[in-house]
Image (cartoon, rainbow, N blue to C red; front, side, top):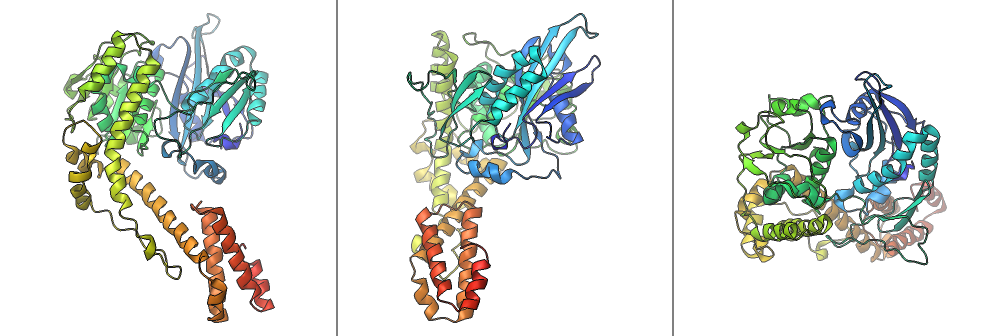
Length: 555
């Protein structure tokens, strides 16, 4: 699989469970891929359902695991090239990989255990859940019948894919099928999906059009708990420790991913594990009772976790997710002491008191959809829009306040370092909410102030603010470059010494390097103008200095 699609490690891997409980690597592509022993162990256990899951037939799910420390990272710069134009919630996390699994278990009396069990796993840096599940669905069934040559042929197809450029419509061939996809960009309007439409003339060879690369069936996942969806939104927003106890890896991974997705376009900055096992290398770290549970969302299926994670403050216990059109009984919020085993009744086990009053309108709308047998896809659109509007109502006052921390453009001088951002003062921000708070855009009542105070102490605020501060600092650097370009730099050099002129040239070259390295939001003509200034200054210097400066850095 091409490295541009996020596979610094193996693109496609095969894992096989032998007649014992051992899980063993059988085939790996590309063959030059390297895995640490720790990564091998993690993937081997995460690639199979727990024995109690009883998953017969074909099952698809997703997991996420930490990259081993000390691994040589050589391709991040290539991924960063595409990363900069992605929405923040689709950017890769340099510390984690995703594993996409297609697992098959069928009865086979010729084997000791009585079952044929095999998983085909795709490893990527990219969180394109729907896309990679679709890829595996095209490859795995045939592969299980035809074995390694088929897998090698599939990898050869993938090697010819174009780079995953955000905003561009891509045609991706895979074993006789052509998928048409579009990766979102940070410039897309939140809540809109720009689907590449099928046109009769140009797209007669298209077999599959993907409406999304990353979204899961939100309503199907929230269906058993949609009465409490607003409370779950608060728990995810605040980065509270959360466990999803499910009957299978498919249900656990889909539900965890739906929870992470519900605060979009905000990024969930804490760790989350769509499928987590007792063999995971972070098991002890996440289950210890010697300290408070960490800010993480875990998806589990092993009954052992009901006892191990009893001290966690928020636990969602779900039954089998129903197919589209079938609606399970709504679960209740229950006290944690009532959760004793994984066989406990489905429910949300927590003592959390939501800050906001429940929005009865969305509940009525979804219930009406259930009664009218509205398709799950349409219900998902309604629920996703509701979460989006809720998140935007919450984040707009923060965005407005943070924008006010930006220095005025007139304070930017070409001959001084760019000015610093003003400090974020929580109490100053709170005072702005009286006139410009979420009440301007949301009908929901409640303790918004309390919710903001809690959020400002959370990992999600920390991650969001660091991202915004970096963006604004880069904007200041870009404005500083533009201010320099507007100056008559050649005239300036005529009034200063050679030493000062050489120092200016070196500083300008460093500015250009910084603009390229940090992807500063500068206009192309600004960069070209600055290069012209540098060249003109160098040509005005003595020849010996010209030679030295032309060899130094970039011009």
